[in-house]
Amino acid sequence: MRYNTAVGKLRTLARACEVFKRWPPEQPLLQAAYTFGDLLSGADPLELVQVVLVLNLPPEGLPWAAHPARLSWLAGDLRLDKGGFAWWWRSQQEPLTNPVIRGPVRFWSRQGPDEDVLDALAERRFDALRRVTPSPDAGRARLDSDRAAALSHLRAVRDSYWEPSWRREHRGPGHYPEQDLWEAVEGYLDLHDAADPPAPAP
Image 1 (tube, rainbow, N blue to C red):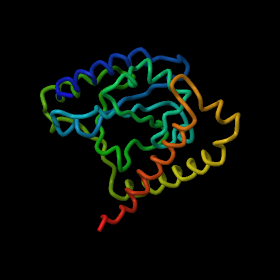
Image 2: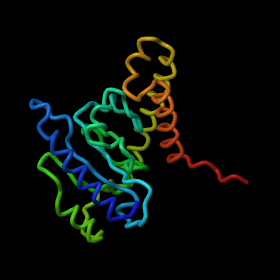
Image 3: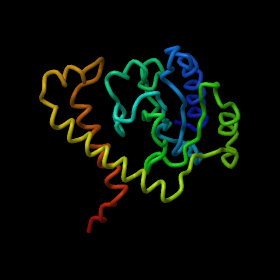
């Protein structure tokens, strides 16, 4: 995908997020949207637009790298599943960054699209972007916490995998229990390898 196409997709996503800024009225689900990765380095072409959607849900309901079946409707309405995006859900109750999400930049909030950010990206003014960057100590503490939570989630998925009730809960349009197992494995290994990088092959 060309760089300008990627920025256009980000603008389209920001407009799609506007539909959810006050839904549900009492406690809106979608809180903010960030981008990170190749787009912020000006790669052209790039494979995918990497985005993080911050939700008003507890952290235990959004394990790292998981795409729960109950959120498939939101991914569909935002057209994240139509190609061109790699996306992650994140709870607003936990820090945004980790070893995968590095230096993210917000492009949408409940106040509306961050037009200055979108314009800076369109004009490749990367030095004008305000990135979220934790301190090294905070980053390490976050990694340890995320890795422990990912391992706990992986064990829970393994232990429940063959239970009929669990499998029913984790099945939806285009979503199967096998996907939850795969994402639990991938999520844990992402963080495990970030904490203890594997030795290079001889």
